[in-house]
Amino acid sequence: MSSLITSTIRCILDLNCFYNLSNVVDILFKTILDILFPPFCAGCGKFGVVICLKCIERIEFNHLNTCLVCGGQSIKGFTHPSCATFYTPERFISPFVYSDLVRKAILEGKFRGKTFYLYETLADIAYYYLYEVGIAFGNEALVIPVPLSHEKLSLRGFNQSDVIAQVLAARFGVPFVGNVLKKIKETRPQSRLARGERFVNVSGVFQVSALVHGKDVLLVDDVCTTGATFLSCCRALKEAGTRFVWCFSLARAVN
Ligand SMILES: [Zn+2]
Ligand SMILES: [Zn+2]
Picture 1: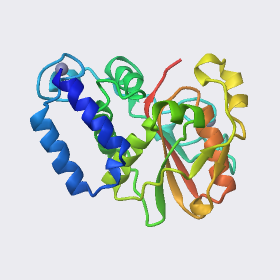
Picture 2: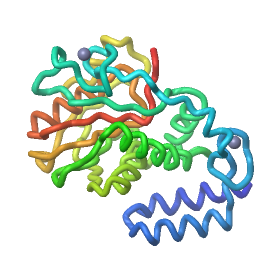
Picture 3: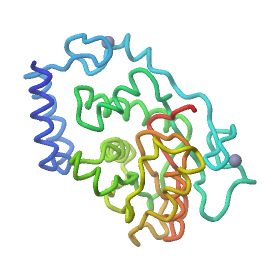
């Protein structure tokens, strides 16, 4: 019951733009909440932690780095020179396999389910992963989320990719900008479409603010399946003058 109360309070706080407060206040308040309403492990239900060490070991890392354009294996996720065009991302990184606890966290997180706060822990682990694979930013960088459709945003009240992007931005000390990309056309749910249809479905549906001109962008999503959404976003970003685009998804769904 206490975890339900914790989730409810945190949910209310989040809806009131809690993330815009300073980090110190944020951490202090979360610590107080954790003392008042300790969490339970998302994997085994153990009292007092968002995820216990035993369950962390269950999390499957994605060791298959691929080129986002052709889906073939590539060194450290760099786009193959033969696949690269002016509009393609430089690199694609996804630390976890979309299975077990990560899948549970992502599915429940979309609706602020009971494992919502596992998102932040996974994003923290992902930060170290990114750091290890050599991601570093210059002065002209931004972290931006893949946007939700207007319909989904109204339904859920938040974009789950914002949560991941905000953690990474804070860790890297790079600005997070939440509304750079906008979805200007409604699309059919990608999960119900065949691979080829997914690319057509998201083609030309994103609009970009001029803020990205000359910047390097870490583009963040929760899960990547075919890469169609990333490629469409990246095209819009590059057309608006973005220099480098690194696509990051918390998890990768293996077909
Ligand atoms: Zn556990
Ligand atoms: Zn390729």
